[in-house]
Image (tube, rainbow, N blue to C red; front, top):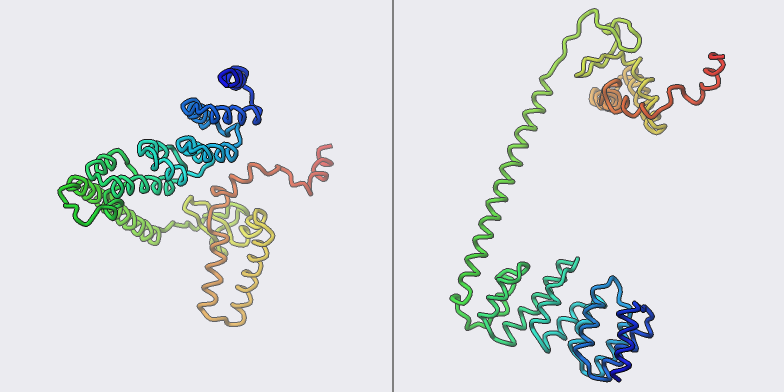
Length: 318
């Protein structure tokens, strides 16, 4: 049997054999020879890999039949069955259960559940309050309020007075942090309201000789849009330029609104309806400057000559 183990270990450790049958046979040999320490060392090394080479279900069945509980603990953990792993570990060694619960898991809720299992065992099965308090200090996930329900009714507050004081201090610190965050949010809201009010009161002087950036004619002869950057455009000049950068759905919506605005002024629509239509048009046309906004930035990726005019432009260059 020793020779078989030596040969199989040589295949696995030296030759790096990854044949599942070889690994299963090695586990079987460990179990049959009662070499539990070697089996545990092998399972521990396998647990460091992304995926174990051996068949975990076969190994679990074999170890369960031979009452090798510690090995079952490691196999359950390798299978991702951490609750079963901790339950079996608590049957033989609390420290082993703590190691499983303390392993790095992505699911924080699961890890907390595992620690609660260990804490419940320490308090109710071993009835060791002092050990439970030490356990609480070593575990950063659990707090005193998590394990209080596990304590017996006769337990006095003296046993966990320090833990309660620590927990209350943490809560007070957290409350202070929340107060500071609330104050910061309140100050931000005040600043935003002040900025909005300032924008409402903001104005731009338009001189009589100011011209439209697109057509070059005087700005005041018709409706226009003036932006904070001091670029100004006639409304009629701005519409086709903006529509060139809109999707077909947005163009259709803008045309509908313009038609609605025109027909509403003729048919005597209510002031509220006209105001709503005008606000929507202003939102589409005046949300940003044609020269300073996102439209100008996005136009960098557009060809200088539209595809439909390319052939005509090429002919002009010949």
